[in-house]
Image 1 (tube, helix red, strand yellow):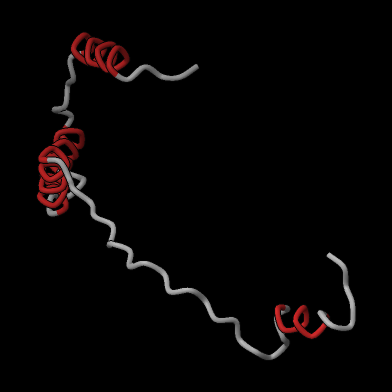
Image 2 (cartoon, rainbow, N blue to C red):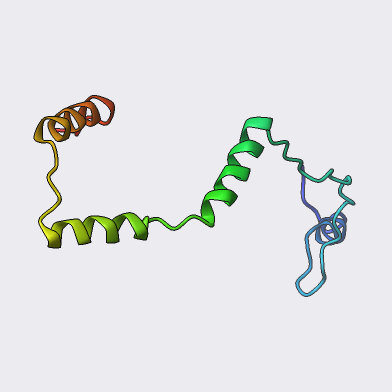
Length: 96
């Protein structure tokens, strides 16, 4: 394009002018996002809510064991403890 004195005003009119807001073309309406939860997720959320009311420590069990220890009446079966530890290791392996 050849620039001359005749087309300079037209070129300046096409350039954005400072202080003058640009007009934007209207944007099309966007639909809101939607989220659909599966029945399994709803079931898990329900279970989580139910468990929220259960204390993490069974205090009555702790107190019972504490009394048995103090009285010298707690005699765990070493074989059962070892088997439980081995079963637990098979389910939840410890990373090395």
